Structures are given as structure tokens and as C-alpha cells.
Image (cartoon, rainbow, N blue to C red; front, side, top):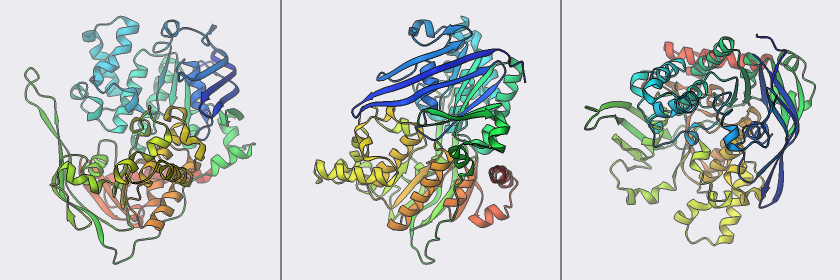
Length: 540
């Protein structure tokens, strides 16, 4: 590690308040921390602890109703109180940030190559042509396959994990002095996560940059951080070297975080449970590029002849690396994407139904998306977001009845009913994910596709959500397609596992068989990473 004598960024007495419909909310309550040259610090804590708002205040990126006081000093320059024009000389050049939710940070109208080039053009004065070789280099560094082709892709043409890697490439473009990483591996599978963490460590060693790592994943913290700050309710409750904190935590809250892990197994479906959702030889193909000047288009087969049968009360876990096609398969089975093949729901062929014909069925086929902020309207209160589906599918309900249902749904996912009067931007990533779950469950569906539903949640909340989803499933005889890269959560949720790679199923079977005796090398690699992580958590 580099010389740690110089504090690059010092935060003293930082406070952040938000003016809401329910009064003033204190998000950060006088935080002190610092990061030195060449050092990695981790800020950990549950959703709503204030860890993200702390760095957002430093970067001048708080929502319009946010108020900040205190000090954030970068190499002798006070950042709090600077105008946007003054901050822009530091942001994106000296201090950069990788955001938690890439789809809301990337412009859907611009190709990713142009977006990665933007900080190079703005801060280094390069032309788009001059920046292109550096953009290709960055795409290779963060593990984007076929960078010469993907440089011209749009964000929606990439998986969640690939979009996160694009954000990392953009943050690293100008070799920053301080890199703030807000849950940068949340959307990544275990193998790519390891590559990204190794990349960050190598770049830090090469450039001597400081890293502020915000995460709920304590496994990452121990591998990456030199020192740790533990936050709860807007305050730092414990800090120290990583080794000291893991070996001998002092605060009860820290001990709880270290012990949290999804446990137990769901009850299996009845042997004679009927098949509720079935896909046979499902194929999804995307057209990439092409046009008058671009030449002939290319076609990517994201789902390649997959068959799956989901019983009533069953959970099928779908795992695989980013870009394997698992999310595309889930959307295709719900008729949210055009596809080829047979799709049947509740003994009815739905593959050829028109949009109007599908509308009455939508209530029974719900999806919880990977990126909750991108799927929640910023102009609607949480109560309006949650009850929006009721306006379509149960129009006879009064406003009072809808409000009662919203209160019940929020309580089910562990949120206070008073929160229904707030807006999505006032919540942490984990809280927004629970709002998305409430929105789906309020309609009492039969099948739910859960696309990384716990990816933005800290471990203790993951455990609660897993238990909640299992309870809802038992109470309402729900069927789940559970898509995730977090294999410990998949194991706790699933009866049956499908392993996907490059649009195909490489292995499938009962959960115990897949985890206990995987046949394929690819599956064994995924399982080994999950087992190593589980052993680590048990050891600490």
C-alpha cells in the first residue's frame, strides 16, 4: 500500500437533512471520516444508514430538498458550498463516482462509447476520435466482451452487470485521485465481481488513488478495505482497521452485520402440483446495429431454444453470469419481449396473444426488476406507485380502499406506512427494492419473476426479504422464477436450478443436486465461488 500520511479527502461534522411531506428527515448526523492517498476505506451499514448520502453530499449531488452542513476538504480545497461550475473542475476528473444503479445513470439515447468518452472530452480536451482508443482500452479493462462491437451499443442492449462495468469504465477514464464506489458490484455475478475487485486493486496500486467503497457486502470489505466505518441511522457507530473490526467487533450492530446470512429452505411444492407456466423451445433474438451507413446488422440470440416448466408453489432459480440470458428468459416467459416458441400460462397458450388480450392476464404475471429506481416514477409518491396497478386491474376500489391496501403492502415488506407519502428519491436503494416488491405483491399474482430482487439489499435485509418471499409464497401458493447471481440467496429460495450460459441451459436439476454435485465445469466454477464466500462469512 502507498504512503498513508496524506489525507486526500477529510470529512468533518457532515450533516444532511431532507425536507419531506412528513417534516425534516436527518439522513446524516455529524459524520467524521477521512481517506488517505493509496488507501481504501469502506463505509458499511444497512439500507437507510446514510452511507450513500454522505458521499452524495460531498459530490454536490443531493436531491433538491437536501441540505448539507459541515466540511468536506479535498487536498486543502473545501467542497461544501462550491457552485456546480466550481465542483465540475473536481467531479469527473479528481474525484469520480461509480453509482449503484447504472440504468438510471446512463443516457438511454447515446451509445456507451460516446458516454465513456464524455469525461475525456470534457476534462482532457480530446476529440471523440482521439478518445476512442482509450474507450476501447477501458472496455477491455472492465471485462466487456467484444469491445470493438459493444462500444457502439446502447445501454438497453446490455445486461445489468455489463452496464455496471460501463459505469466503472467511465469513472476510471481520467485516472482519478479519489474513486467513490457506491455498491459497484451489486449487479455482478460472483466471477465478474472478483474480476472487478481485482481490477480496482490493480488500478489503485498503479495510480495511487484513494478508494471510498460503499457496500453492504462484508465479504468484499474484508478483501478490499484497509479501514472500515460502520454507519447506522446517519452516524458512525464503529470504525477501525479491517482486521480489528472483523476479528473483534465492539458494537452490537457490527456483530449483527457480521452474523447475517439467508438461511433455511422453502417448503417444496406438492408432488401433484399442476404446471402453471411453461415455455417450450423459447428463443429471443436481438438485432444489433445495421442501417444505411452501418452495413448489415448483427443478430444476437440471447435465449436459444430453452424449455422450462414451473409448478404452482415452486421456485425455479435461474443463475449464470451477466449476459447469459437469464433476465431475457424471464421477460420472454411473461410476454414482455417478442419471442419464438410455445408459452403457456394456466393451461392457456399466451404466445400469440395481442397486447389487449394480455392485459387481463398481467395481474397474475408480475415482475420485480433488478433496478428499482429505474422502474419507480420519480413524480409519484410511494403510495401512488404501489397502487398504480390497482387503478388498472381493480378500478372499482375507492381511494380509501387503495390507501388501505398500500399500507398493508408496505407493512408486509417491512416499511413504515407513513413512507407512502414520500417520493422514491428519498429512499435508499434497499428501501426502493422493497417498494418494488410491494408494488408487485399488492395485485396478488400467481407467478412472479424476481430479477435480482435482493441485489441492492444488505445481508440482514436480504435475510428478511427471503423469509418474506417464502411466507408470501406459502400463504398465497405463489410460483417464482428467481433470477440472481447471489447463489447463497438462490439456494435458500429455490426448489430447482437452471444454469445458463450464452443463452443456453448448461445444467439443471434439484437445488441439492446442483449445489452438492454439479456436473459441468461452468457450474462448478459458479458454485465454488459461492461456497468460498459462504465459508468466509461463517468463519467471521
